[in-house]
Image (cartoon, rainbow, N blue to C red; front, side):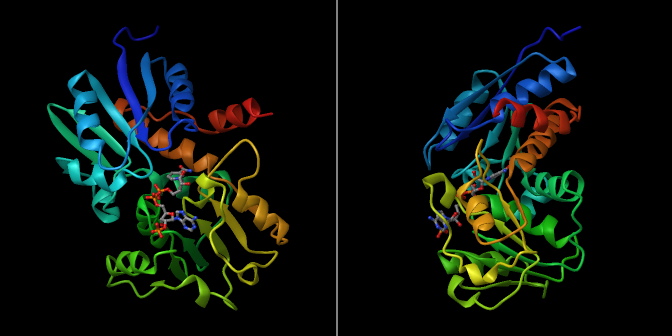
Length: 277
Ligand code: NDP
């Protein structure tokens, strides 16, 4: 039997028209027999507080927050989970008893996709993360908890990568590095956490940093290979993955926060890939 109370959720960000979150949450709702409304709302930078407040005032119970609003979501939260505090960025808001609770499910989403869906072990690996925005803030601590040998962050605006590293000042494994100083270094895993793909661009990574055995993972996703995945393959990389699995896993964690039920993810990942064929 389907529950009769319709709960209202949305994803806010800019751009937002590409977002798969409404479809994913519809799949989760059908699977768990919940009746929900889930919409995608375009919200410009510096406009989250007003839009989120109005959404909650009108009966909304939860929001997913995407680029470029995760820091604003962090600032507007009345209470925060430990992982949101570590990330200093929020991608999930839950409105309970007049309070806005902020969480960050990006990191757990990425780790589940890498370690469960793709069965990759991060223990002892050398990892390069490109970008230092809201998404990257969410994945650093969970990556460190997977016991890599080293974790390097490179960002277009290098000061932001340096600031991010400072948040983990007791952890010698994590360092920042300018893009042009990466040449000649080897990495087991390169994660593209930049928003370059949203404007069909590539981060300025020298292709000598890649080898056939490097695993490339793009947080971005799409019905065709993303620009970064296509570029990695063209450089001879054998394993180049997109972020669809992470997207579904982080959404499942948000759904769990809101509804107390953890939906099955692999069927949703398969269904979305099937829809694209
Ligand atoms: P933010 O806007 O918070 O950060 C953007 C980052 O990308 C910054 O580090 C910025 O560098 C960098 N950047 C933007 N354009 C370029 C470019 N042309 N070349 C190099 N670097 C660039 O975005 P988010 O962190 O929220 O999102 C990043 C990406 O991750 C997006 O593509 C988003 O769709 C994806 N994502 C996927 C998720 C998933 O579940 N699969 C979850 C969350 C995000 P600078 O500091 O110099 O401006």
